[in-house]
Image (cartoon, rainbow, N blue to C red; front, top):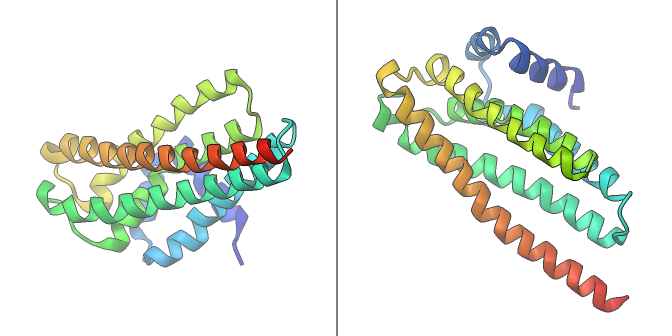
Length: 195
């Protein structure tokens, strides 16, 4: 069973006091499976539920609302998973430690900024709130802080590692977002025709 106290406590600590929290994370021995099940998946469920609640105030059909929530979940999961695998493969190019569990730790906990902002903007789907998604870039700062204690990235390679990793994450997000939005548009169009 997922401990939501752990999820929220870790998120708050990563946002308020990230340097100390990365040191605590570095000392933990967790597998990628544990990190995904205890931290990433709860956030993805929260994001999906926020999407459903926020969309209930629009005039969408329940089919579209559920489809959007599933797509939100899938998008977050595949961005996280594919990014961690690819970033793990490039770590040695930046004199960093290649270890799949450690890389998943770095990517998943760094995405905390995105998880929090996605939940808020889905829950309150108003145009002004969408501007808050810019704060999801806090995840890049979290990645920056976590790269040294987790992967041992040397200072002179840190900028390159963070920039390339950020482009990987944003690139995967952009491509998958286009694909999933096309699927959602198809579902929405079919729904309009059925009405």
